[in-house]
Image (cartoon, rainbow, N blue to C red; front, side, top):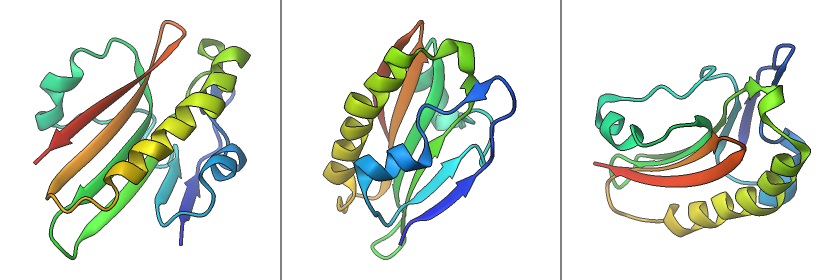
Length: 138
């Protein structure tokens, strides 16, 4: 059963999609979904810092599939708030019709993987362009 936590964005902020748009594309999933409740931006840990240095834009969404052991696993998708003026209606449409289905496809590809570690998918917004980045950390 999915779990959703939501923080209403402050004036001038927006998320790349709404809860309703997410559910429309993903349906019901056994995944933790956070809209701004984990932080206002992605907290890069030491192992990811070198990899993520190449990202010039802002991480607006991240998906993590964590396999700590054969029995311990977790999935989490986080949407981070960002300035409303950085997001056009064209980008919103692209995210909901192209990017969100790509994130779902990536999730389905790795959700049942038995290799231990953390699979990450980052969604970057840079100069009015949306990019996806994969990272695996042991």
